[in-house]
Image (cartoon, rainbow, N blue to C red):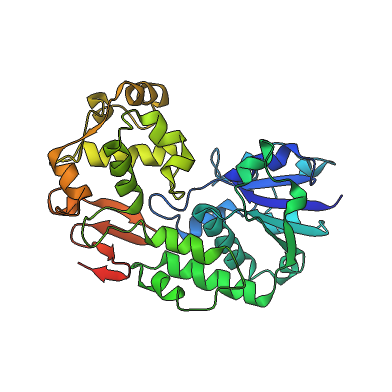
Length: 326
């Protein structure tokens, strides 16, 4: 077959579809928390060594290797790619997928021998749906990876890594057509910056809207993606946003189980049970924030990452729509 697929965690379904000899998912979330340092990524894609603990090598999440390719799993990624006729990039429109794509294009740009094998699949639907009677593999368009695609990917990845979001905002004024799904993903990401009036990002504001509309249990907020509408964050990340709304000095949300304040982040069973016990409502302050009459950041601590930007109360880059520093 001589075909290799690189994808995201959304593309796990591709492992079961007999499309390639190996499917390599990149699972590090790039929309949440501080970005990996460049040397961390270099180690991740390098040949396995004593520096690699569990889950820190590119091959650790490959479900199955075919045709004896498992014997080569400790190689550097570019060396593993060498015998394949084509290396396909399957990344859907989701912001994290598009970030994974541009980070790989930036990486491969310095490996022209691998670039010659690259093919980009234009996956304009949620990859998760391919395993649930959604679009089929035949519904995607395959294109060559040109210099324009490499340049657009590298430029965009460096902008996202920058210590302020200004460079990413400036990308919206550039021609990004080489990567047709990127512009919408960037807008989705920029909308997660704190609003100039409420101090909250788009997902946080949507959570307030849904709670105000009567969605009191966390299950609907976490899992009903069509209802939630926002596509940047996954369930456990939304849980952290909800805790920020509920457990600050001036909470916008009431009814989130107090045990979540003390449970370890890796206690998934305990945290899941606490979320299920919660019955949510908006506080008076939360209703004022939802009405754009109060600014959440004036009463609560802000401490989160947006790409390479560390958002704090003293470094609060806001979306207007447009970029405003405060």
